[in-house]
Image 1 (cartoon, rainbow, N blue to C red):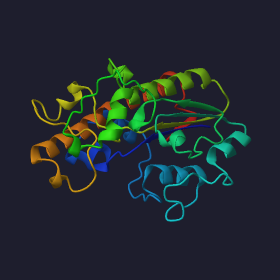
Image 2: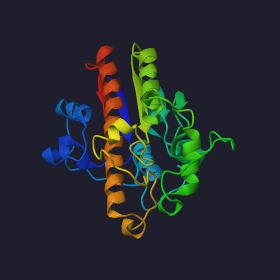
Image 3: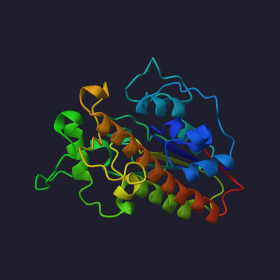
Image 4: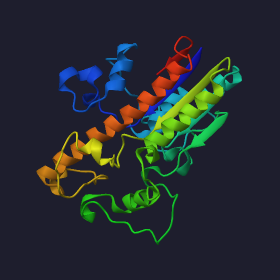
Length: 271
């Protein structure tokens, strides 16, 4: 039995039709189709909520909160990947979530192959002061420093296939194409999307708020939105998030199609 785990950060339950039906706030046909074929958890609780503590819980099977809130994973704790690798599984990690490496979290420990998709969340990747960065909203409305780094990282982007979730899922597909004939494998795919910044192609945004003109707080400040956004801007932020979810759903669909194409449905658990 093989195992594929797909982690999609910050995906709200009210944006997945499989959970809320007609009250859904985004189009997620591939997630909904997958849910129809699957065992669906409807009463689940997280041990730790934020990015790093949540991964620590999942990788070690131990409670993180409140003992390890936002710190590196303890190096003496055995991990899921180490256990699978000792049992003879091929282990792969494909991720764009920046904290895996940039904050020394040791979350990659135990994986036999690691693919880091660069450029997410303002992590230091492309540094070129000749790149002209124009913020899409007034500086006081967004996390300006991190957003400028993020936009520099995306300066080479031209097509949807250049977006981070597309690059991450494509690399995961390549991993499966290389490894699907193995006797046993574990692949962990970690996409930070639909976490902010929310900047999907315009044709996704137009599905939710067509014709909008104004500031786009794609990486908004945290806090009470009334302090820095107008109601129209706030509505557009929600549209940006929904559009991001729909883009993520599309690329998850490509991954699921590949699982079927490679004949992995009968011997692979997808979580």
